[in-house]
Image (cartoon, rainbow, N blue to C red; front, side):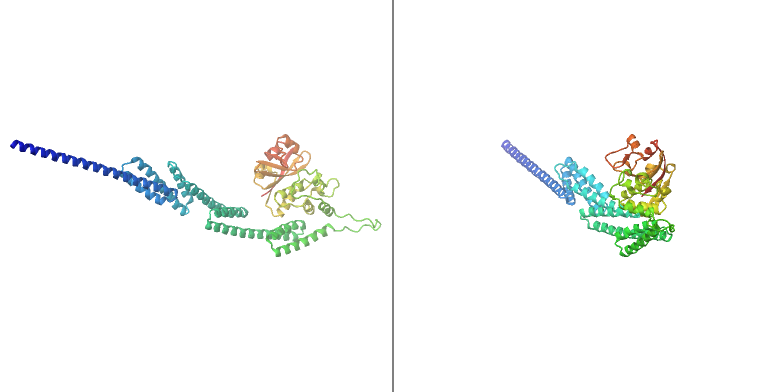
Length: 484
């Protein structure tokens, strides 16, 4: 009986053990199921935060994107998913970089912001299926803001150099850039700069007009009427541009009185001739007036340069009083060089006016037989209001090529084995060539040197120095008049 009870107790224990084991197994299964469900929930939350971060990135809302990315990072760390954590850290670095760059942009630190946007672009290159095109727009906008302020700085530097025309043009460019950006403050800044420069230009032009007028007054009072009228006309051009009616009236009055003085000098009659002479014989008009009237009757298209004084209409122009030696083909290189230079400077003048000044100011050599003095050309161009630098025997003190490159236009005079000659020279940066106009004495030799370019007017040469010193018939240059 005792044995039977013992057997029953053992059976009971076994049942208890089985139940406990089953309970433990069930608990383990439930725990595993709960753990798997938890992991799945964490993974789902991680993926949701990542998806939201990507969405906000594409919407250019990196602040909210960073919040979701940081939440995703916590989940990745809980899941011990190192790969996901690395990716999320990359996104956090990206969104933080963009946010900081946006703040720099808002503070006007555009160059620093641009560096940040470029760095963000590099970070975004590792993203898959994420549209970060907004970065390109940010970079473009930032570069435009940088360009705007660089234009403003450049315009201000031009003002400091008194280059008002360039400053005005740069401010206009800055205004266009600001308008494209809808940058109202920038537009206002550019417009204020434009107004300031325009006022400076008006002040400078008024001062220049007054200087020219006063120079004319001084020459007039000294009896140097030919020079005075040049300055008066220069002043009149500016007064007309300024629509200064008082200045226009006063200057026209001075021009009229000066022209009367010139006419009185030109028409001055010599002592009476012998009564026995033929009363019908008329005294010849002074050559200067005769030449002026003759030259005025010759048509010139004031936009066309003269490249050969031996051809009409240049060959018809008269200067001086020695028959056969007073026509353009013979002695015209000086006034031709002046005429060409003024066209290139945008201030064309009819040859009749140029020649009259040369004659009336005593600027012709032996009545024009040997052309024109260099100083006369210098005075005439300066009298029109241009800045002129005149160097005699330039080969002794300056680099011809550099001096001509640094000027708007130059007039070079050189002595050759037959006579002397003036040419107009300009440097064409677009061609990287020096263009020599009316090189009638040197044309064949410049062609032989390989400098001629038939696609443009004038001889296109690589070096003025090479032309002068590489041409056997040219002895030496004796004058360089440079206009800046």
